[in-house]
Length: 114
Length: 117
Image 1 (cartoon, each protein chain N blue to C red):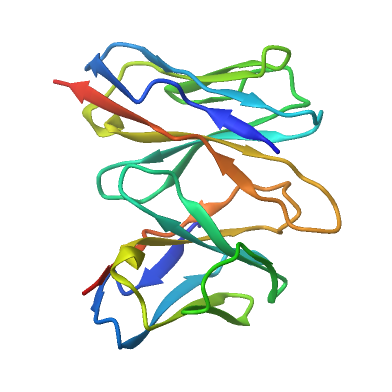
Image 2 (image 1 turned 60 degrees about the vertical axis):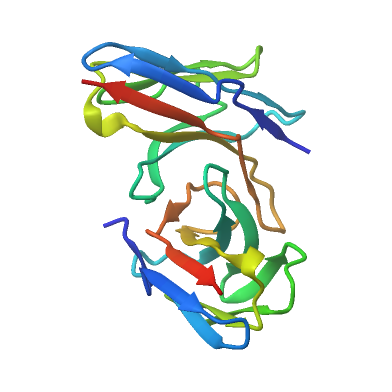
């Protein structure tokens, strides 16, 4: 089973709202990733968690706050977003973060900021 | 830093025919991994095929195969017997493993493939 699940599928939020995206995997993977993807563009890496610790933050604005409560779960907390933050947010996982294993992606959350 | 180049933004192929998608990359490393990912209009990113740089044999997965030319730093994807469900954006990606830190997946810009009935 190579499934990564993400909820919600779609999210519309105002610039003053606080919301969260959720990602879950049950493959025993120890690295999890958040990507942002604009239409017709490749995914852009935002954060990497390895063994439940934040190991990479690609200079993401603080209005995005990641959290990894356990090895299977990854959250992305959103607050005071801007319209340009509207995008598809993809979660991925891999067996570890050392780069020896492929990443498996979830279906994404389509976020619209109004 | 590694770079991945997909120079063709769009391609079209007739159903049941064969199509080849090009990818080149640049690295000074000897040990790395290459991938092709497919992203259909539904937007789920799916791993199509993986190639380890240390393996001389080209990877194959059913109708998908690669032509890996390490010296030329070229990694093309061949899709045989194209099907309507192959219509998608295809991303070539590079992964370099190293110890002590986390490795990042570097993507090309992608190519939009349309399969015509």
